[in-house]
Image 1 (cartoon, rainbow, N blue to C red):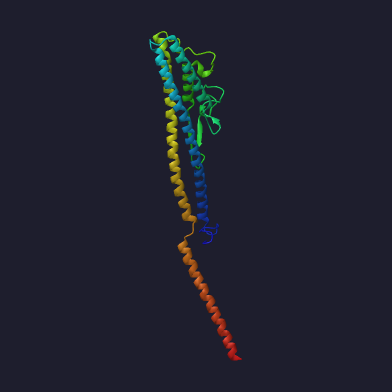
Image 2: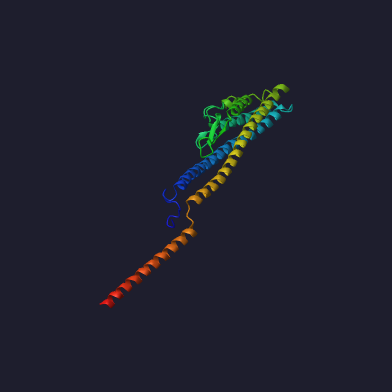
Length: 270
């Protein structure tokens, strides 16, 4: 026991204790892997949320442009310049939705379309957050992503199918208040959709953080429980070994003395 550091080295030492210890060890290993899963899940959510942060910045700039084009003092050439930047930003919306990826997997699109389909988050995904098969966490952003893709497609002709040779007309045709206000309304709708997605991703990240912390607590206590069963009590075993060693030394000494006396008696008899 002192050599291995374990109180239980085989089933003969403590059959019930060994069975419990093996079960605790399996649980601990499963929870350690689940911790890695939660870390990967958090990283994925943060990657997606970061993309939507930039998406928000782009939309806010597009709203600035639409608002400026809405102004009566903006000339046709002013609106054309504003439209050029608006188109470029619409293309960047396309790029963000189409190319954002994590671990080699695209998150929002399959890379060929921007309709919110084919990406990892375009359907419900599950994370294994515990040692048993039943301990899973599902994140479902399918509906929110589809609504966002629809909103983005409506606000810019350059979003769905970017075409540098054919400029959009969202701002250049802002000849009446109703027409001029329309892009602003669409951008506000898109911002609301982005906000919904970010809220879902943030909630998922927060839950995964708490899952990770709780797993760490369970791993610590489960490991301690296994240790109380398996680990040797060095003080007790050292004391026990010392006592046995002393008894062995005393026995050896007695045998030596007995042998010496026997030889002395034989010598006297001769």
